[in-house]
Image (cartoon, rainbow, N blue to C red):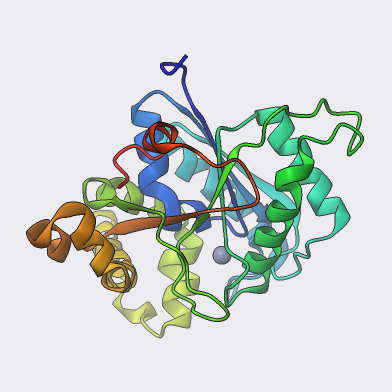
Length: 274
Ligand SMILES: [Zn+2]
């Protein structure tokens, strides 16, 4: 039974949230022959300084699909307008349908403490769905699950009202190149919109190899504070020397509102995690 492939479902708010926060775990799943399904609930069409939403929506759908192909994962983008996601009954039902249909062992999503309203909304909607996926009279047209999946929140650094509990820390060092290649597929974001927003658009190089190197630096610059925040846990998990060196880390908080894995199950659900 323990050799059966696992199924990972990542429910992010925007195209690129899944790989930015959990690309290392997703890549590890694929390398082990497990199934990975990544979803952006919104169409991501708001994020650009020049291209209008009608151009952005199909572009971001294609960029996300390409990012999924880097690791052999399905990456689906839903049609909810970017910036307008709410934890409505309709969204909850779509998530229940998705979980019941894909039957994931592990679901990853955002916390409800987050700067972005779309992140808060998907975190809330997944929490709301976590238990109801087992209740037959909720969405009776889709057969219920007998057991919840394990649900975990991807890392953020916000502290109010509560900081993330680092239940699992994962050294993503060996996955940096893969994560960067996935992020690079989101061309309109990483090389255009986010660079524009950060005032560094003029530093984006022209050549493809140079772009990848630039993005690697960008990724490490953004991800390093996460390792610094959870440095005590990294040192406890990986030892003084290694723990102090790690720059790229993924951190997960296991939700109290869904299945609680025992130690063996946790080890299997988070390969390489401590
Ligand atoms: Zn996002």
